[in-house]
Image (cartoon, rainbow, N blue to C red; front, side, top):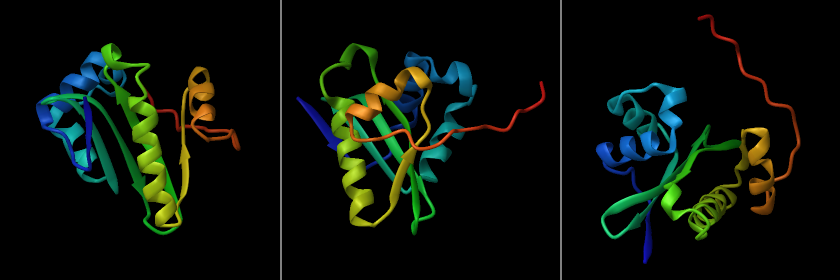
Length: 132
């Protein structure tokens, strides 16, 4: 049975989940820095199968107007079980209670997943190019 907690997961389990899903191939972040990013979040939800972290997601926000869903990850072995959907539902519910406008940036091929969860495409996202 999957359980959900409003808490930052253990630093080692968090890092392992990011490594497992390949996110850290892009981020290239040590576990201490990844954990610090989680600490800077308005909300963090974690999904567990027993003691094992199988998913996480977070909201970063100014706390007044905007909120951004980021870092939604589900262990590949636990996908298609509604875990991501449930984490998004709970995070969105908390944002609605605080009257925050919830948004996210996603890769184009993931847009359909988020549209099924109640998001709609409304703008073009850009990122600043870094040298190197």
